Image (cartoon, rainbow, N blue to C red; front, side, top):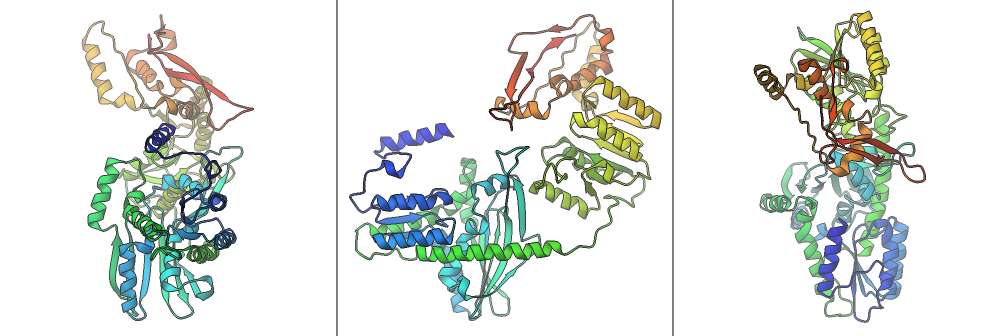
Length: 584
């Protein structure tokens, strides 16, 4: 990213455009000058004052303009004192779909307009999204709609008679998320709405509603209903033709956030109107239809008011107890099924346990009774459950699958039960003993099973004592390419088989990889191949006569890396192999 910015600066300078780190580095403006401020919202008041002091005659502020109403009012007062015209970049004020909806609503007595605003974030993107837009959803994403309410429907805090929140989780959700860049023992959490829906009624009877969803997709819309609630028309943005164009642009430049492409024409229209109105320097010129700082102040007041109302409504809704659903598994009454408990799930699409779970849920002869997740469901270790994991839990519970933080939270197994343990290797011995003590009849352990031979032998002895069958998840034992190689080698006298195992990590991923797989490469990645040597070639420590290592750096390398989440003055380092090659 630093290289891209350096390229941008070089390109600008070649066009005669200066690039500096501070407004204070600029000379005083001698000609009428527009300053377009698109900094972080918390930085805007300072940047605004610097621009005014440099002699800016027009300022175009990105929404919402400032973190608080008080700061925005101080900025307005300074602008009035210095005769500076201030606009706010509420692009939806000039968007055709909004204009069409407003026009239709004005022609229809007692009509109601609903504005639906969607972004296309994945739930996994929400930690970064919440952190970058820390002013909160109503002061960030939904502020566009609040500005529309002020501009076209005369909605202000003073004109509201009722503010009704739809508290159903499908449309309104508040999340507390672990903030990126922070780690144990000093994690930082950030709270915001991922989606909201509310309806406002004004004192003169006007009704208008707003719905916003960070993960709702690329298409936003305005719906117009008559006095009976019948939908008259729905105006989408982008429409099918525009969406086709946007999809092509996203495909051509996947690193760009899609909403830039979606809103490109509107932002160009705003700039055209502002520059067009002021390019001749006429006294009292105004850009038609572009929101001013006064509109922004009222919109920000609405955001603060609405945030308080949403918080109260969602907190009250959360206190209402729901009737607990029976948790007997996803196929409790199906004949010829085996009860299974997954221990150690991990994050959706990232954890090996989660991957096992997706397959178990589809197996017709399996009744998934429960999942045990020792980290994400432990309030002390993880006070804020990640959104993706919370959604997984909700989905499982709707199927009758219990989700708990410890095996000890489960009842004693009354039926034959398989425990599939996919936890961290250092945790496996404890999880194993807990499962045995709950009455597991079969245990399927993710490789290598335990951190040491001694612990694995103790687990074996306990299993023998309690008559528990134990399997280890060495999937390569049944992989066709291995079977083919073994078959051919057995047909060929004095043949030699070489197993080559590759992962696709980038070198920049190795700190996280080494930390997560702290048992080491040979007990983690290469353990599959070692199990193959034992199974098919009778290789054990006692049968080895020679162990030859290829020490060339191209195939064998040992690294010591700074461990993520640690820092000066107490850094922690972790050592492991990034690649190995040996012959037995």
